[in-house]
Image 1 (cartoon, one colour):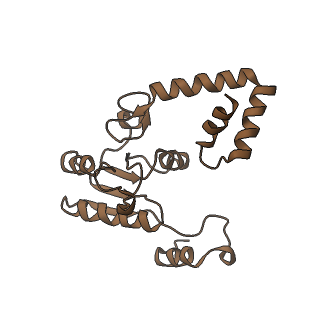
Image 2: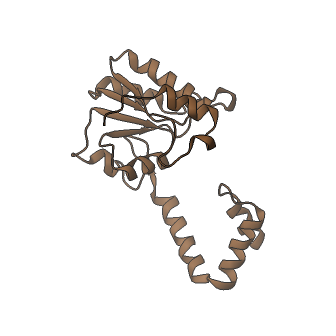
Image 3: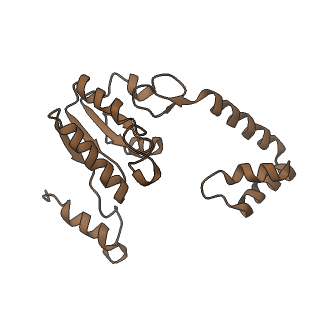
Length: 195
């Protein structure tokens, strides 16, 4: 039973055998109430959390709170790879549009194509919903760039403005510690300085 619990914790990203073992022994020796609470929360989440039928993020309802929010603009659609990307963008309070979650990126070598990412549903959404701008917020990886390019080509047929989030140096970052690709993106994405 302990070994089964160790293996279950190893299913989490970044959790190896030693870390899993620490979690298990901590819960069994020092925090059984916390372990029971964790078990109940996991069961509840696994049974009750699904995907929003509109944007495909994780949600306890058929339509998530962002999609049903009438104060958000319906003309902007931000395309992200994961539900956690929505969380990151929402923390900035800088975006007031809607989202579409791919749940990954194009990777033919791994068997992930357009249908696995719901790009057919995205195309229907672009065709029917009066979207004026797509914001491509896929990661700055080769797969993220390929995915952004694919979506951009798909969206061109609908005469929709296509933008890409800027990539570059973070606030407080120093040039000497940035890699060459980050510096190249920062230079190519520069804009006028208004002081």
